[in-house]
Image 1 (cartoon, one colour):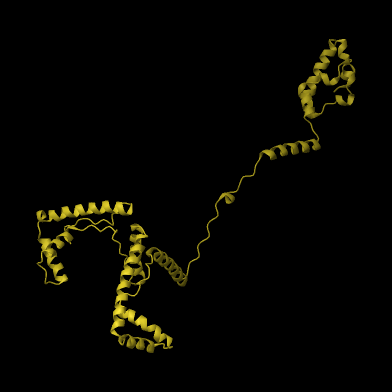
Image 2: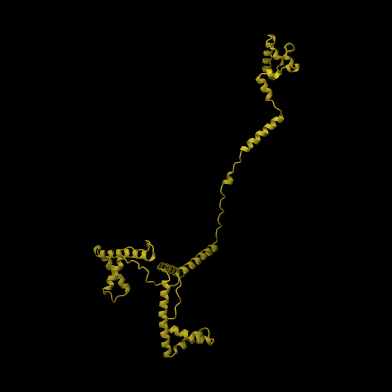
Length: 324
């Protein structure tokens, strides 16, 4: 800034130091305009008395004030950056990685060896047999009903008291049983008959202690055990069990065998003969037996529901067939 302008600027320019009057290149455009306005007002003597007391900062233009106000030291910039960083740091949240959210893959099962597979299969079969035996029920033990077996059991105590064992024990028991007196034989026969009656009464009482459904399931378990273990368990006899429905062919066979035409024929030959006759019947001739078979199926369904408390399944009911 020229010194003559500063010196002649009046009261307002007295507050400006001469060193501040020099214009730096970066602010030439702003400062020159400001000085031009100040000089114009000074030359025209339009400055009021109150203007002498106005501080220089008041007359500075807004762009110049802003340029000085926004200037900051490196320390201030560091603090500002830190404060901004702290604010944004609170808002930002760490995203969960896809690996953390992904479910862990199950470990592959170890392959069993042939020996382990056989052992596992045997264990399952053992458990199955155990459950089947429990379902099959165990009837009460019978007393000896056969007179000869009862005689052997009677003399066995005497032979055993002598200390005889092995094959000699069996041989001596047989010899002694054959040599008993007639009176002893009659007594043993009477005892065997009494045992038979006692066994029947005990068995019937034991059957009545179980429901018809339990007996039916017990017989099913016995059939399966006979197949699995190759045994010969007898089915439990219960008069309360519902008789299965008969087919039209079976009803025809019962009629034919009741007539007495096959009295002197073997069972196998009778079956062959009746089968041939059934195949030769007309539809009208079969109608009678088909109707009877339908009535028997209805009887079976009704009794099954009454006795067992449930409807028979399709596999249990037998359909009427026009062929054997």
